[in-house]
Image 1 (cartoon, helix red, strand yellow):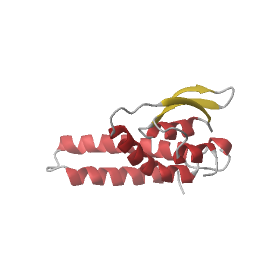
Image 2 (cartoon, helix red, strand yellow):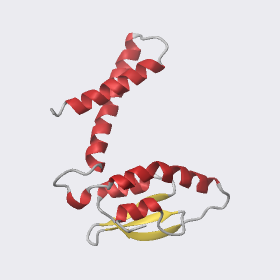
Image 3 (cartoon, rainbow, N blue to C red):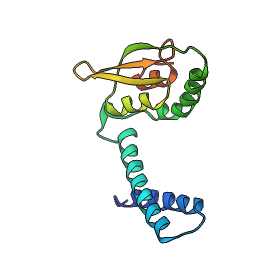
Length: 143
């Protein structure tokens, strides 16, 4: 498959979605939609390349099981944060690299505050009392 097909597919989907939201297709709206869809397509391709496993990437790849847990983790953390007097703790956890740190920080209840590349760890602040399912999937622990 040629390299241009993925960004073009994303652009078509995003531009089509934009067109479905506007009330009148003026020249300004079409230019804005074109640029926004191009930016979104670039981000989508970059995110897929960074997060999904690929041959030769080794330990930098994020497991698909972790990506599947992310939406549930976002909802769970949002519910935790809605409670009064939520506090958190700092912890040092093993990390598989930048993509894993990005996924860890994508849920509202955990975010990466520092990285130690020499030891392969990241420091996280989390609202849970211990590692949640997403964190365990990212660091490779069995649940």
